[in-house]
Image 1 (cartoon, one colour):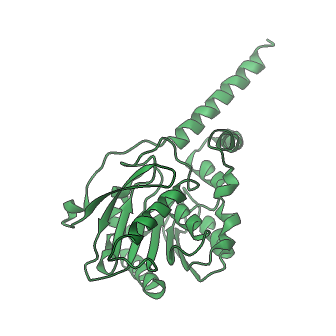
Image 2 (image 1 turned 135 degrees about the vertical axis):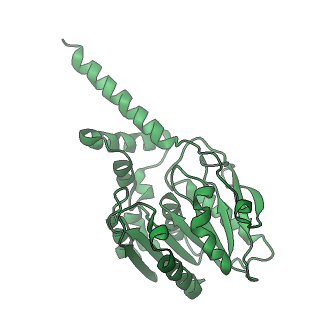
Image 3 (image 1 turned 120 degrees about the vertical axis):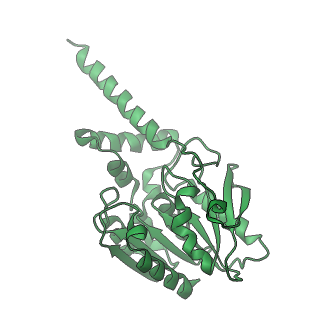
Length: 283
């Protein structure tokens, strides 16, 4: 009888750790297609983050001569192929650079940090574009979805390497990410706190370090936030919280949609106009 409570406690802790392990080790999905499948020419790029991770990307030249570039950042449990259709409309006026975050797609890595280390991947993409002779280093922007939006916004808190950011369905804090991606009912509190402990103990950072709710006031870069009003995965109040804290030029569009990541596909014409107008103004 005396062993039941300790045994249950151990089982719960092991279960929570297993949940955390799965959370930071997303499955790698196979490459579905390349730009060539859409009759678009591209360059297959190998580059490296400052901490040594080897990353893979695609460079797609603009349809019209341009010295401007936009980095396209995919979401969690995805890769650059998932963002291909989403960002390709920008090719009309901008060079595009798609890449796989660490631990995703064809890039190196074993764990994801939901933006903390992925900022280094964004910086590596910026550094790559800066050495291309046809790109003006002062004319680089970012469009990111979910994890990509978080990483892009976190990069914007660091300075002026990027001139404009579009973030679709970004989460305001990592506790919220843990909560919404896993429906564990009465275990949610335990999952969140185990996550906090494990991030600090094993990944060597605090989840507050990925909190845009706390860091967004450092963003001076022009920012456009996009979110589905009834997003069941990342509630739209996340973008609203970020929007309220940003001190630089900003805009927000809450679309009449109830699906995570579907705003572009449901409101394609309006989405493209808003994004193109935004980049035309600030990039």
